[in-house]
Length: 151
Image 1 (cartoon, helix red, strand yellow):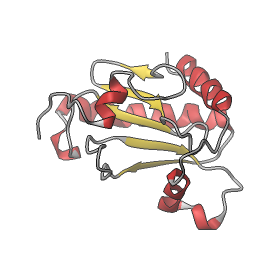
Image 2 (tube, rainbow, N blue to C red):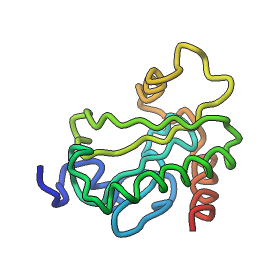
Image 3 (tube, rainbow, N blue to C red):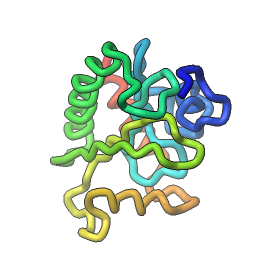
């Protein structure tokens, strides 16, 4: 489990701005970065928060990364609720996809009218497509508003 960037890791590519995500990185500091989910867009406002270092387990977080994580998740979720109008933001970590072993937290605004068949971890079914489910312009607008909110 090296902390160096991996050339084929999708999350490392996201940190380098090499994925087709709406707009530039929303937030970044020396430890973490937050970006909109790359295309295809499952839902406008579906964000990904990841450590800048390539690590594959939460247990590998440094004390500084761990201390920063909680407040950053809280700030981002609160801003996402305000901006999208949802009452709940899901926060999930699996990092099991073949090219995304680098830990990354999904921050997903849960719409009030989300069908029961897509609630909880089932929301990831929205990712099973090769086309955008939400307009790219809407995702870009949310990303820009998040960028301003997290300055």
